[in-house]
Image (cartoon, rainbow, N blue to C red; front, side):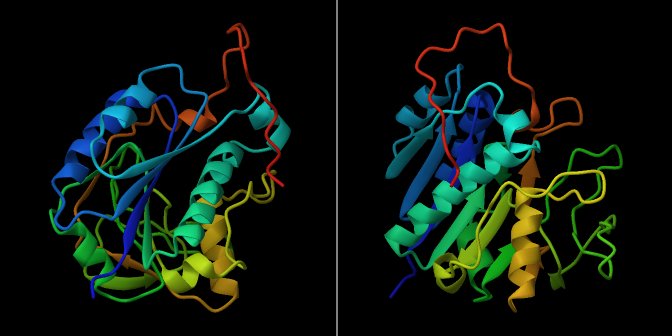
Length: 250
């Protein structure tokens, strides 16, 4: 019996990139059973792109106030909320695998799903180009507890790592249903900085999970240093917000 696989996509104001992302998703064989989108506050054509996408899908929407980044205390707070909503839905759907992909990701390998799930591991990431001038592939490792990221110019095969990005992240049923594992707005201060996905991996490692990265996967990443992540951008205070409501993460 084939595995039940769902894709989890958080997006905000990235209509053009999301449209391209979904074009590549349409080429996948096999297809995931369902695409779950989580969107907040978009004022571009993001919702229209999702509506036009013909694959089985669901849409989760939430709104945040303009001062949400400041209130949460770190730039990753909003995406943490979106990822946790998606994870909660994956638990409800009781999928065998849930795969997070960001809306600026392109899955270049046609048999991506079979490749990332064939290892039968609980947490598997994929390398993709990060927006650094060096254009390095990400092979994230937490350096002996010093919280210093380790990058290298290339990585090969299937290997262990300590943290990996949520931009392309596959979770097994075991990891999905384990409520010790969750995304939350991480601690963000001068002494300790960690994104919501790295915090997830650190939490998983502490309770005994092993984190893996499949360097054979071909994954594109469109983000650039000048246009990094939309949830990190301070929202326009002059824009009139109609219908916005407070969203409590707890």
